Image 1 (spheres, rainbow, N blue to C red):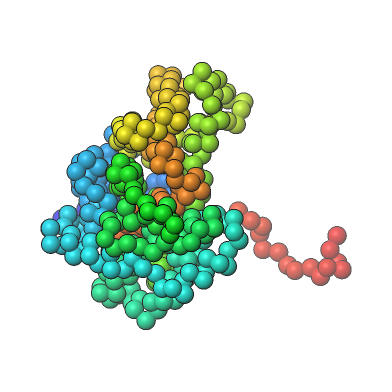
Image 2: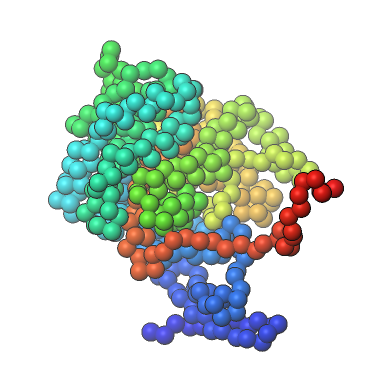
Length: 433
């Protein structure tokens, strides 16, 4: 089928080109501008790539205006209610929900690869005792490539599958060691009799001196958070993974690039900032004062957890977490964190009724409630983004594997508009004024 076209004319020269217009399953149409430079000698300027599609993808779709999020066509609400993280990871990576046999094999492979090479443990000792766990994660994941250098042919499907399984399987182990190293406790080996989430909690909190049993509610809550964070289209960290992968780099360094990008306060660190904000507010009676501060056009204060780069409606993930937040606090008896939830609910209520927030479409996002759940689960705040990284690894791997097999696969090379000095001649230092 011949695509529609858009005519672009250079009014200076009068030259005209026809650019194809492509339409996906959902979402806005896309103008193919590849001929813009070769025929008109121009580039497009799009800071932040807010109107630029960097790839074709069949993995995740989101509609920010309608509050829709789909993984491989499945609504996030259905997956959150009926599925579990490892099944969702399989769906993202391979494109379809697995049969019972496929899921059993996938789960078995994940368990078999949960260990890390014993030499890798030495990498942790090279970091300061108070190093941020995300800093350690970046280095250790990148270092993993050295243990599999002879089986990282990115154009071999068997190698791609094997390394994707290794990375997904080892992430909880690596992440838990980041925590244990920081608190000075001995590392805990994985227990392959446990499920993915339970095993992570075991490696995080178990100690050799006493038994540890994970609360089933904690496993449910963390599994839910992992599902909701597993992928989110072409966000900053996913784009970093794809850009690194476009150089034909190995998947370990690509995931390391994603972790480094996720570390940013405006990306993966937002839920940590939300908890800090709620602690600063302290009491429900102070909420209005902080709302007014955020509305002050002469001030710099802003409420964390509201608004989103893409969503201009209620983040569907926030609605799911909001409901789960009540269940988790009730089931775990986390009464100490109840005031924080009440502050959050009052903050949300005021913001959703206030014209200032309504006009700017500043709805609560996924980070608004996730931090409260993690705090109730007694996850250290410095580990919040690490948990995000474990979950998002499923999406990163899916995106990387899709990119490698794309017919348009090529190295990423964004352009720029140069606004520097015109050509000038070098002047020896003795002659400079």
